[in-house]
Amino acid sequence: MCGIVGYIGDRECTPILIEGLRRLEYRGYDSAGVAVLEPDSAGTLATRVVRCRGKLGNLEKLLRDSPPTGRVGMGHTRWATHGRPSDENAHPHKHGSVSVVHNGIIENYLALRASLSARGHKFTSETDTEIIAHLVDDELKAGGGLREAVRRALAQVQGAYAIVVLSDAAPGSIIAAKNASPLVLGVGEGENFVASDVPAILAHTRQMMFLEEGEIAELTRGGIAICDLAGKAIQRIPRTIQWSSVMAEKAGYKHFMLKEIHEQDRAVTDTLRGRVSIEKADALLDGIELAPSEMKKLTLIACGTSWHAALVGKFLIEQIARIPVEVDLASEYRYRDPIIGPGDLLLAISQSGETADTLAAVKEARGKGATVMCIANVVDSSIPRACHHALYTHAGPEIGVASTKAFTTQLAALVLLAIHLGRRSGALDEARAATLIREFMAIPQKMADVFGHSPQIQVIARRYGKARDFLFLGRGNNYPIALEGALKLKEISYIHAEGYAAGEMKHGPIALIDEHMPVVVVCPKGPGYEKVMSNLAEVKARDGKIIAIATRGDSDIGAIADEVILIPDAPAPLLPLLTVLPLQLLAYHIADFKGTDIDQPRNLAKSVTVE
Ligand code: M6R
Image (cartoon, rainbow, N blue to C red; front, side):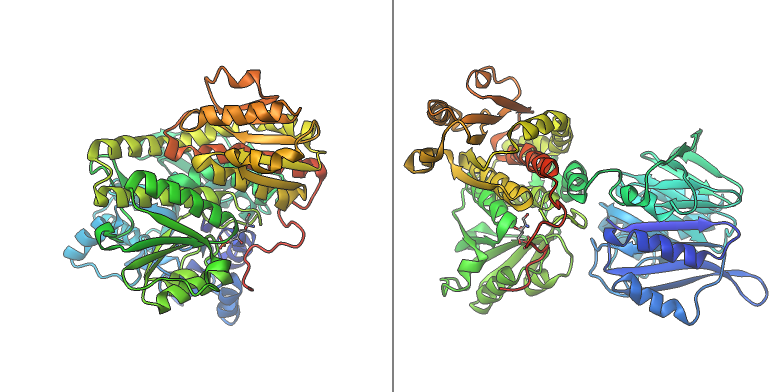
């Protein structure tokens, strides 16, 4: 998500930091900043922070006339999570002698902020990061040195973080710490580096060490010492990174899309972070409280992949909360003089938050007096700004034009919403909610498990990748997944594909089926399984080739399908989070096999800001 780079050595660090940030700009670009320990006329070091809203270019303009001079510093490019993009929310955050840059989400930041405020602390930003600067500064005053102060401060923090900390009260070192967000340490000669990603420091060293969960590193000019959160020393041997700079940007993956597919377990974890509680049997929506009893009508609108998420959302909300839901394409909705008004809730779903049709639909509904909420990925983009409430997915920047992690995090946000509404409508009792939340929290691990099928899917992709057309079938909440599988294949491989509700096949598309037609069927065990089996018998009787996405342990599917990709089992409402993954990988491997421009397919734009 955010990009981090830090340096300690004998060279002027500002150019090193800016060059490193340039290599990380794809991770975040709503604001940027640096903090450098700069000597004054007497030679005393003081931290100078320069930061501003906007792309890195804005920061470079600010630095042009008087760049900070100094040999210890850190920089940051931000992808907003807590707090909109602004000068005040840009990192580094400084309090007292302590400056911090951070990537991640502090789950208990509201509680920490309240307790710090009660002790007289004043805050200048809306971020969760600023509280870390306050905690570390307090601990530093208590003695023991900067590393110890960071260690004690982190003992109070819950959540995901990769942080780098420096202090003019301890100018001989910089401290880095990691939990659930990546950090890499670069080993140089008389100088050392830290970064969120390899590309930021690859120009300076190939000797690198990756920090593990719950580890803290102290970087000095002469070396790097690592310990755990209990203070126990850890030995780590640097390894030589062989990646080219282009490979490093994609973390070694061939395309951003493949990298983003493999990030989905982490991304969904971030969507859930701090928002579900098994003890309370509830889903919290960042302070948004929805009251189903006061909601006259609930309408979901979106475009493209986000519309497929909305279709799954209808199943989720209707099944879990027993509230009727209408779903519409934003591009249709806005031109229909929709019947909506006070007491109705319109939920817009958009990765970019900039899709022109979705934005116009939001304005139309708001203009007619409805309450308008969105599920979005890009904080403070146009759609969230036009809404009363925004629930962010925290997927991080999505570079590949074909949406992958944006989709699954939208699904996760919709599960949260369904649980929230279900608990308040009375349709979801405490015991069922706790069970569903427990299963929900197990989904990221199951997603990682599905990625293990990539080699098998690659073989299937080669076997069927020359087909002219594909059919995708699914029922219930896996019908939108069939639509999404077909869209992914069309977008990046340029193969014609159609998604259908399996029961609809006999009403027309069955005429297309012959021995040349691969039919991808999403048929996990659960509601509608037997019906899909009957549909598959119809395909088989016409010599169609069946590629099945089925549940592990299904002993019947192998008798009818030509290829079977097995996924872990999960409760029906959560299955789309797993069933879509093989379809993303299938589209990816077919496109890769064909050699198309996967990250920037022809004729498509990442964000469609025109009607
Ligand atoms: O940014 P949005 O979610 O509003 O974008 C909507 C569609 O343009 C988008 O999902 C598009 O269909 C993707 N290319 C799908 O992969």
